[in-house]
Image (cartoon, helix red, strand yellow):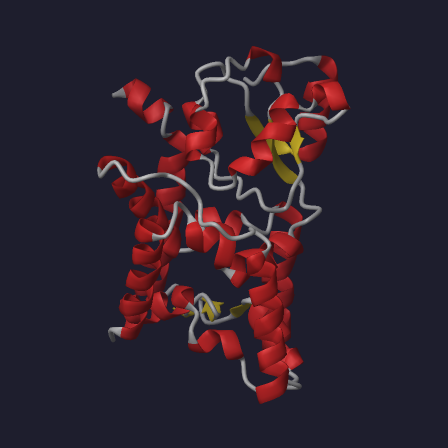
Length: 277
């Protein structure tokens, strides 16, 4: 049991984070949804992507919405934009479940045959539609906030949207939605491009090419430069903004190749040849 927990400690921590946040909404500690909420009825939080669409639609938000977007955007810019995807977003549970079922059913784990840059085109399209229609366009079809609304206030629309994402990942390709299509993840990735919290293959010389990290990583294309880039002068730090800092590579690696922490500390560990604790 102890070994099982150790090899899933990051996954467990993420599920606790997602569940705790939802429970705080149920308890009324947070009022609203992930799109816009208030902590203890006082501290505002606004999804920065909502703000971007509002500005594109030429609607200047009220002061509290601007403060809320600055608070939330600042946190993600500092610590990592796509932490949202792994540690907050409820749709992540469904896409992980779809991947699990793909494996249990013996389905191919191939990725969707689309460029991972498509999500940035959808992001640009959402902003363009907002500008053309004067609306916060993506929120009409956003499965994330729709699911939260359904869970908190009832209704079936969000459940249907979330079910569609689940079926997409189950039928079209592994991690189709989060990796290739979701503009919210794309936006938060751009927001956290220079964030402090990172993962690094600090002990990459110990890698035995087992491939376990590739099988669990939601963005496996990021692993190769970190693991195999030494000959080309590429450091072990996974600096790309697409990394969700989900920690699954740390969970499954039997050689303790990976570590998570502040960028500066990880770079120091790499220079000094230190192994993860």
